[in-house]
Image (cartoon, rainbow, N blue to C red):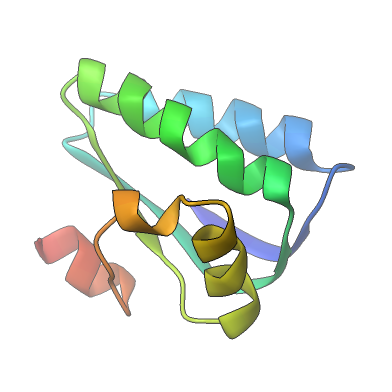
Length: 96
């Protein structure tokens, strides 16, 4: 799941819906790719722990790829970053 541009309150409902659909899929793992995300709202970051829990309940591993300092900062400040392993590329996340 690739997120590009700004993930703010205006697009959060679309993000939340796509994330919910992704984690309830029949995939073994879902990767949220924030490499092209310039802005990540606190609300969007805080949606990730619940999505991770829902994914785990269905046997799906939710993984995050984030390389931009701005996005990493939001993940850290919200306490979300420690819930996810660090991956620099989608390929690395898929191979884990």
